[in-house]
Length: 369
Image (tube, rainbow, N blue to C red; front, side, top):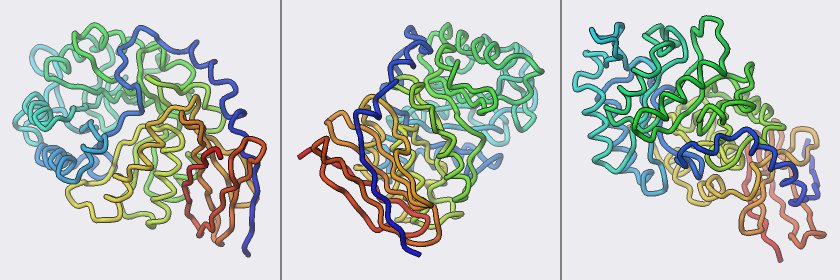
């Protein structure tokens, strides 16, 4: 059955409450994320199969594909890069089989392409894959990462020994600040501990808002639902992170992937590609390098986007743009096509509408008259 939805797009209402986030921000941390970070992360496509060849190859592909030219910067090595034991001096070391050149050599390679290197650890005695974690080794590990030339730390929340998450993540944040290098700090604590309420004060530049994404439509819409009410905690240098992108990993249709990245862009989310860039075909490439989509993600109009209207499976999401326009995503969560439209004559914004297929979205920029 076809349905329609009308919504009054009240842009002024979208910015109400955005000042409350400032109380949670550590104003002393480096301005490393004035806009949501963009890059690639190994986990979704490679998991524990990550190795030196794959990291170098994805860095190459990031440049060759044009992704670097549109803003993708970070090449992030997720879990499973480290050896099962620390070295004789208590330092983390790369797995000699997977990363025979060591992390510093990879950082040098990535930097030589004009990109930045990310690394992974956990605020526990072990990582989520049972490799050495950084709990009680924070100062040593932060200095090690800095000496290697690491630019980003993704810090997970496995095997924390029952100690408070705020304490564990703050300790690493302070260690990074004292490391002598500016390192972007990503807090990967799940929604159960509500990191959006406290992570900014640890020195973090972005923080997770839900459990791990999977390559499925149900996961995308569940994560989108979880973002309700989180707008006040997101702003430049401190972003809500709904998790890495799954675009191109094969579990969703092209329409579903377009809806996925459209919602992430409207949320001012970090855009961390999660597919294997070496094997990327035209559809994920075109979605990941869509300049209009990226422009929406990187533009800060005072608050991240949110759902503003709903009727059945049809939803309207919107965010203000710094230009005075509004970015709008017309989302169809259901299995029947539907007509969705916005009206905002009282604000001088013209009516916008689109026919939206099932499990799909249309992004529009609604500009003043």
